[in-house]
Structure formats: C-alpha cells, structure tokens
Length: 193
Image (tube, rainbow, N blue to C red; front, side):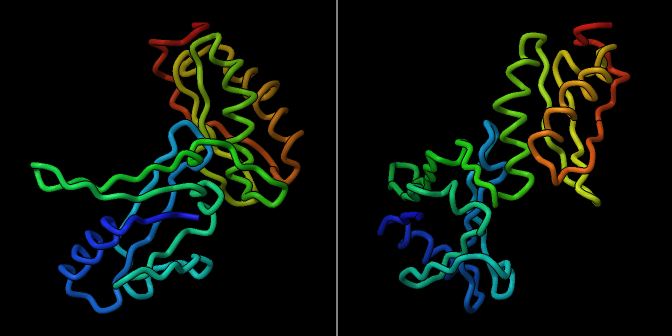
C-alpha cells in the first residue's frame, strides 16, 4: 500500500523519539481524496488517537496508522527523506491521491466528489464556475459551495436544482437532498448578474 523508505523510517523514528511519548507513531491520510485538491498528510499519532478502522503498519521503531478511507488513494505512495545542505526534506508522493477510486461501497463523500469533479464541474467551467462539497450532514444532505462565475450568479438556483441536485440525486440514491452554503451577496465574478 504505502512505502516508507529506510531513510524516511530513520528520520521519522528520530523525530518521534523527540516527542518523548511512549508508543507514539504516525498517521497517514488523504484530505479530499480523489479530487484535484487532494493532499496527502502525515501527523503524529499518540496512543489512542488512531481511528478504530485505521490499518496498522509496523515499521522499525514505530507504527504507522493508515486511514481506512484513504487506502485506495495511497496505492503506490512513497514517503522518502533526502538529506541536503539545509538538513533534509521529507517528501510524500501519492500518485493516486487525486484519481477517483470509486466503487459501489465507497463513502458517499467520495462518490459525490467524483460526480462533481468529473461530470458537473466541466460544464460549469464554461461559465468560469465550480462547485465543491463542503459536508454531508444529517439525513444524507450534501452541502455544496459554489465559486467562480457561479458565486452570486442570478441563475444559481436553476443550476443547483435542475443541474447539480438532479444529477447527484440520480447517481447517488442515498442522498436525500442538496443545500447551497454559498454567500451569493458577492456578485463580482458572477456569470449572470
């Protein structure tokens, strides 16, 4: 799943020793997986801070906990450490973090993002617009935020109801609704004013 090179393992082991906490490890996860803004992260993981469904990967001197949801996006990921004149740099290369990895059992957030980035946003781009998922709230309602030419646009209600909501509800039957969290009072870049 994820490769941590020997130099990175050594660096992380030394870094974790400085935390002076028995059993401290790292946690690896991807923020906004499967989207263009995906970001692969490593954080300290003190005993008990890992999630119940995290996968445990033992390394020399520490354990790595990998977020279950991030697993398909971390395939072929490599964590490396290279020394240089300034000390060194830890790098994470996760070539699959931004690629949609959608299955029928994928979390609803991943499936919504897949539809937004692959079907809806290409259409909105012709007007300079974009829509992103903010959250999935109670009763499986997708909370969205419009940006670019869609923020403050006089046609955003039509776009939301007839385009975005209709497409999402058809393709993701678990969704019970869609809500817009955008402040449309800023009409500076609006496509239709």
